[in-house]
Structure formats: structure tokens, C-alpha cells
Image 1 (cartoon, protein in one colour):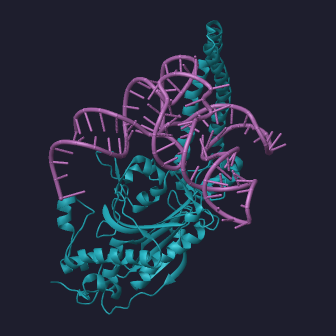
Image 2: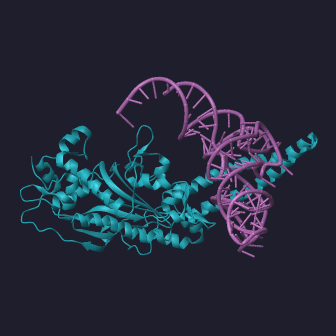
Image 3: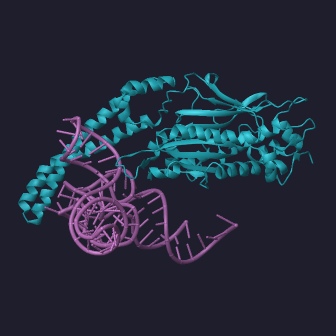
Length: 426
RNA sequence: GGAGAGGUGGCAGAGUGGUCUAUUGCGACGGUCUUGAAAACCGUAGGGGGUUCACGCCCUCCGGGGGUUCGAAUCCCUCCCUCUCCGCCA
């Protein structure tokens, strides 16, 4: 959510920011809505002020049992009633019109985000490791998993339809092992606080992180009116909603391992095979709540935390910064980490780390204040996947596959796999 | 799911139609006193918004949203949440 005052003060900057996103200028229409609202407010407040004064005089007259004066004053103030009633209604309508318009406008990219139209204009910022050498033709993860007899899309479709999977035996355990490994790393070495939070949220919370109103079609909704979280970001970020935090306590760093549910509306035909794009997947998420000054450094730090997972798994990856045309709705800067998949012969997104500025904080009303400070201000929010579990499993299967169809388990995961070093067909 | 009771400032807790500009207590901060502290005493306080170069002035907020009234913390409607008892239950 944008600050209308900032738009009013600097409409040209705002429109220039929108243009970088490929959007038309909106400042003029927004300012018009705002001016109409403020005009109503001024007249309304003046009338309310007069009403308050007269009402007090009525009270005083009643107290002195001067009924005649009270009745005269009542007649005086009666004329204001209609004006105030319609003014209040008008203010509500105008305020809603402005907020509705603001609610669907994406965040403005930071100055150092590269301009571009789509994913082809993203810019690589670093690359780590190298493609594994293999003396056989690498298979894709679904062929490996099905070959092991431990990954079953067919039975999953009978249970739930397309875009679901059933994992068995060592692969089911690998899912758990990956989550444990990642959580231990982030809590033990990087200072994130492990958090368990709801998987179902109210509309207000979904609005807070920017999922609503614009992306309702991407969410699953329950018959209780809740929405299933598409990412733990939604739950974790909302933990600071409607609060004024002590700045000395920032940054707050939280992590959670949760299932994620995505309707994948509009993804028909994309990644239909395998585990890359599912309605249900798990993810270890990182969320940071910071002061405005801390946000940029925290973004780099968070991205490094996500990359560290891949380093320890010895998976080749590259980190890219998304161009203005490819960024998500609420983000002002996003790094994607793409892991190399030898079976697919492609880099695929395995993590996305974004900073939102105060975009979500305004929607959630999450603020902070220095202990000695008078002024409250909005916190900054950041989140990143570290990592998506399903896609990490895909990467391990494809990168650690052997010529005989077995899969070697990365060293760091073996303690979590009961010492198992190779997954073989049983 | 059924029945009942409640949501008031950082916390506790009054107020049930008219100087409420929200009583009081605790806690907090500043000061007086003191070598220092404690105690005592005095004083200061929140959020959002409009307007102003500024000082300031004004509007609004007693869980959220509507309504009644000249006037609402107080009355009505509605939603949310908490607590108690019953029922059910991993």
C-alpha cells in the first residue's frame, strides 16, 4: 500500500516508478480522489466542531433547568444534522474509493533494480559451484523417483487430482530430513527464531501481506471463510500486525516449516509433470521485520542464509536480481536463487528473497518506535524461501543420481536420514 | 455445537445519555529533597487524521463496523475476540 501523502508530495516520482513496472501514470487520479476526500473532511470537521460546541451549551442549559434555552439551541443545531450525516457518508465513500484504488497498485522498485520487461531481463549477480560431471545421460527427477518406487503421482491423482504427489520410504523421510536440516541451520547459526503459526488465515491477514484483494484466484478458501496460506510468509509477517514495536528489538527474525497451498490459477500446461509445481508443497521460510535503515543489509543477509543451504548441499546455483517487469506485486527488490537441474538441463527457481519496504507494514499497520523517539514509523518487512523443500528434493535427485538409478544422499543430510548414504530401489 | 458473562489508556480497574478534555491505583518518565538511593511531594504522558512556514487550532479513537440522539464509553443492530459451565474431541 502506498502513502497518499508521499504521492501528493512527489507525483512525478510515483508515476516514474509505475512506468518502470510498465504501468500507466496514476498519481493524477489518486490525488483527485484524495482532494475530494479532504475537501469533504474539512467541511465536515468544521460542522462537527460547531455541533460539539452547541451540544455542550445544550448540556449546560439542561443542567441549569433552562429548558427554553436548550430548545432554542437544539433548533439551531438541527440544521447541522443533515449536513453531518451526509458528510460522514460521503467521507466513508471517498475514503474507500481511495483505499480500493491504492490496494491494487504494486510496490515501486528500488533504484538499483534493473529495468526490464520479463524474466529475460533479469540479471545474474553471482554463481556458485559447477554442474556435476556425469558419464551417463541424467534423468529427470520424476523418472528417478518413480524408478525408485518411492514417488507416486498416479495414486496421488486418484486421491486428489493433478498436481499432487505421494512420497514413500526414503523419499518421505528425505522431505523431513531437509526440513530439519534447514531449520537447524537457520535457528542454530543464523539466529532465526523457530515459529509455529496457523496455516489458515483471515482475509484481513491476507490483505496485510498483499495476497488480497488482487490474487484471490491463486488461493484456496475454506468453507469457514479462511484462506490456506500459499507461503509461511503470510502467517509470519502478520505476527507483527497492529503493533508498535520497540526499535531496539529489531530486527526480528523468524523461520517456519509449513505446507503451502497454491491454486496455480493460470499455470495450466506449465510444469505439469513432476514436483516442480504442485498445489501442496512444503517450504522453510525466513521472515525479517526491520527498521527502514536495516532493511537493505538484512536483504543481503537473508539471501546469503538461503544460499548457504545450497552450498552445504553442494548444489550448483546462480543468484539473479529480478528486473522491474518480473517482480512480485509487493516487492521492491527480489533476488531469486536458481538451482541447476541436470535432468532438466536448466536452472530453476528454488528460492525467492524479497524486501517490501513499508508496503506490507502499511497494510498490516505494523509500526516501530525508538525508546527515546516521539515519532512512530512503519517497519520494513522481508521474506525468503530457504528453501522450497520439494524443489530441493528435485535438485538432490537430479544432481546426486547415479548411473544405476540410485541416488547418493548429501553428507550433511545423512545424520537426518538415520545414516543412510544411498537410496536404492528396494 | 448449547447456555451465560465480558472486551475501557503500558497494566489493573471505575464510569450505564450532558464540562468525560475518561475517576482511581500500579508502573513509566521528568523534577524537588538526598553524598547516592529509597520514601514523600510536584509535574508529564497514547494512536490516527485535517489545517498551518511555525507556535497552534480542530476532527477522530473506550474490540471492529453501522445506527438512534442536539449530544454515546454509556442505548440499539451486526461482526470479531476472551472467559465460565455443558457437550464433543486429536
